[in-house]
Structures are given as C-alpha cells and as structure tokens.
Length: 138
Image 1 (cartoon, rainbow, N blue to C red):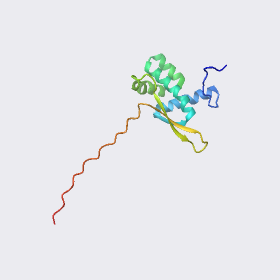
Image 2: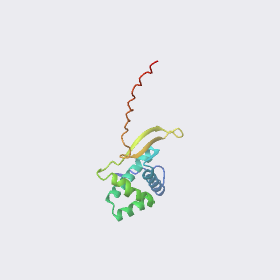
Image 3: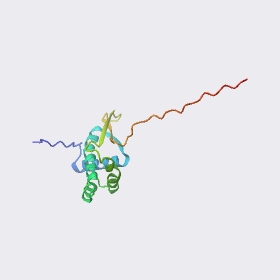
Image 4: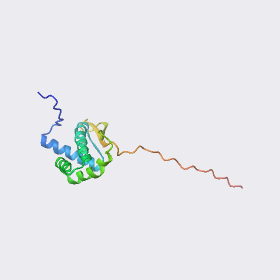
C-alpha cells in the first residue's frame, strides 16, 4: 500500500528528480525568485523549507547536510549567511507560490516560487509639492 507516500514523481527517475529539485532550490537561493511549473514549485517548496530549517540550526553538520542535498557549496553558503538569518524569528512558511496561469507552449500551469520576506511592501513615494509660480506682470 502507498499510504503516506506522497512524493511528486514529476515523470522522472529519483536521481533526475533529486538533481532537478536541488537545482531549482539553488536557483531560488541565488535569484530569490524563480518561475517554473506549478507541480515543480510545489515539490521544490518542501526542499527549500527544509534547507532553511537546516540553515537556522547552523552547525557544521547541518552545513554538510545542506551541501550534500544541494550539491553547490556557494548556494549553501548563501543559505547559511543571508537567507536563514532573515528567517530566525519565523517558525515555518518561508516560501510562497504565486500562480501565473497557463504557459503558451504546453498549457502547463506556471507559478512563481519566492521567499516570503524578500519582497518589501510597495511604498509609493509622495510627489513633491509644486508651488504655483506668480504670474509675470506685463
């Protein structure tokens, strides 16, 4: 029986799927936002959140586990120095998925996967007050 075994297979072998998810998470760490299919975004979300949890613990063993999963030391270093400290007060929910609609090529649902706290609320700057110029006397 397959009870509680909900791995998104994504039409790939396990080695290919693990490499693809590691690359997606490394791209997310590097660029702070990625656009991909909805299914891949949902699968990469769990890997990304587990990596942030490792980053928050911060020991050398957790750093080794992150490098073993991500296969890129540069991405792991960025995770431990920039991203994980930003989420130190947050318990979970480090990423968000924004649905975009269908792609033109294959009609697949596309989505944006991004970190929650990287986008600051948009602030509209106030326009400087323009004083009326006195009319020239003729």
